[in-house]
Image (cartoon, rainbow, N blue to C red):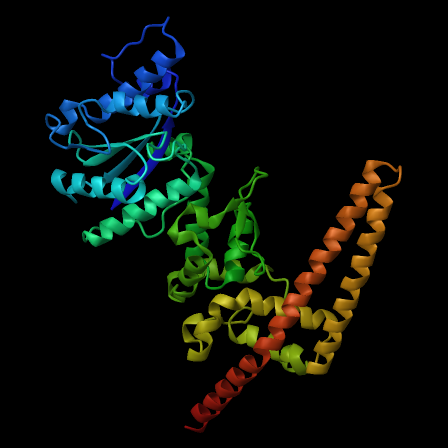
Amino acid sequence: MAVTKIWPIKNSFAAPIIYVQNSEKTLNPNAGMSEESLQALEDVIEYAANEDKTEMKYYVSTINCNKRCARDEFAMVKKRFGKEGGIVAFHAYQSFAPGEVNPSEAHSIGVELARRLWGDRFQIVVATHVNTAAVHNHLVINSISFKDGKRFHGCRETTGMLREMSDRICQEHGLSVIKNPKGQRVNTYLYKMERAGMPTRYNVARKSIDEAIALSLTIEEFKAELRSRGYSYRFDPQRKYWTITPPCWKKPIRIHQLGENYTRESIERRIYENDPSVRTERVRQQYHRSNHYNLRRRIDRIMGRSGLEKLYLRYCYELGYLPKYQQNPTKLHILLKEDLLKCDQYSEQAKLLSKYHVNTDEDLSQLMVMLEDKMQSVSEERDEMRKVTRRNIPIAQIDAARDKVTELTAELRKELKVCSQVQERSDHVRENLEIIDRDRQREKAR
């Protein structure tokens, strides 16, 4: 497993000196800009090729230049193309997991990485440091190409290319790679706080979620447990991420950022894998005394409905999503196991069908036409609003009109999407319920 990074070395002497932490290097404060650039360049090359870190420079190689006078050759290329200012070089590193490679192999991988990426256009110094438990390579790349005089393009794309090429070479050498590299760094303050065992809103949220999961057998019970702890949440099935907001906080937390065990899929699996016997009778009685559900339907009320509305309410009931006197997800029919992770979506579909009293496929088609007509009228309203914004009216009125149109548009699009899902899944739901009823009849016949 190799970790990579790249950053520019500018013509200021302070940053390179502080970074390399080399107390023996000093600069003349009266030096000119060109001398500062040369000194900064020498600092970074000297740091990469430090004898104490490279075993007497045994693991130092150069590409398109001589390692004895690399700095001067870098400077000659800059002077030749008249580009002596700005960024003087780029400094990259490639660090391996402790004990994964020996210094010789690490160095050959670093040289190969430099050749494949930039060896045809740039001068590069490659040095392997062996002074720490994690063997790592340093690459110093001239900011000006010796081939055409163009500058080295350091950007996010370059960082991605460096990581991808490093991973490819590591795989060729039989080394491990990071499968899902994290794009965001953990806040240093929060990292130190959590490492020291101090409470933060993130580790407190993890603890609360773990407790709520342990006491829940369904998603609705999980929501109720979060509410009892003062958390608000947004578990909309149409949203990409689930969020929770701790008590006394305004900023929500995307729960997947809390760790692998806190993604939407992981939480749902942890809940449905719970053993009902784990919860004490006291907790069961306390839970059943409270009213946490927005949809409270007995099976006889559900069976009293008709058409698609009845179909989806019954399916939610069978999935354990609607309240029952005895809920036991571990005894669900095998056909329902795959749909457990889609409970929220089936619930949204059931709510929509109940809201508009949709019973047949024809009713559903008419509803979609009605929603599309509303969308058209909203579009016309938006066009009219654009005309209004050109008039000399207060900004507050303009903002209010925009917010109204945006809110209405979002709601209509959401309902249209739910209608499409009903069209796609109604046959699947109907077939599953028929199989479940048939299997139950066979069990009764025995």
